[in-house]
Image (cartoon, rainbow, N blue to C red; front, top):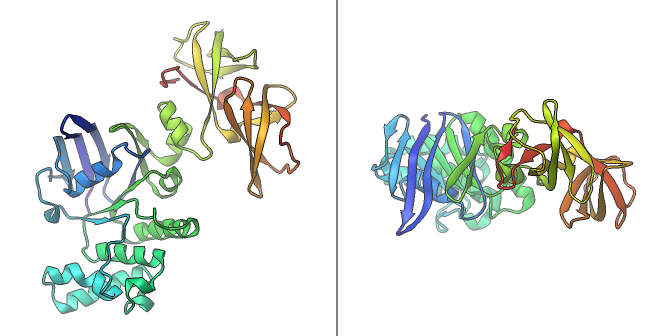
Length: 358
């Protein structure tokens, strides 16, 4: 079992630089998730760790060993792809045994490792079946089993659940969490789905345009985003953003007014470098907002009813979108004008450029 460390890693295709000096570390035995929008470089970064893409600069270490120029087969990694990449003419047993037989492993070793992987992934009743006889979730478990039998130092997952329907995705997230706890291996997982990231990760690495924006435990990123991009990307529904103007310094914080003569809030802020008249952006989580007799006026456009919780999709007077979480109430509000407010301590502040102000 080994950790993974990247130092100043860069990747360019011609004049186009897609990975721009990324440095990060996934400790051994942990579950790290690379997350970000399409085109941010997360899959390219994973392929560089696997050795499937050459680096333009920087170093990649696995278990303290520099593997930047080491061929893929000698890096001690196993990769599970979005496509299952199973051999259709082989049954489950033969698919999982294939790499071992290619390496000329003894028959008894092949039997032991395949049976152990089958037990872990609950595939014992399917070993004689062909991939065409399996569900999507079962095929993905076979692909994972093919990686397990190799006993790699690091498991790499490239959006492995993208081809599954919603119910199977939830089931497979549980399977992967259970697998990680059972075998204790280092795992790195790539996804554009921040719900998957929040569910699976010990540590999340948020990427944008080939740069690392922030890393940390899921709830740390949720509660304390480094910038507007991270605040808006982590969390479902996403964080709301509202433009405001600073009125004055107020003790240990600032007094702000939402645009269009909206409500005023006192927000704790220790930096002390935000002067009167400065433009800022307020970050408001949907669950931190509440309906009130007075506050920010919004018009409810649609209610997303989910049973115990509902989300009021609303629009402000300036045309901005605002989502409010509501628990308990079930009365219809479509088209109604209501007021929402929040505690100042629950509001995050960003500069117009997206920098977090603390």
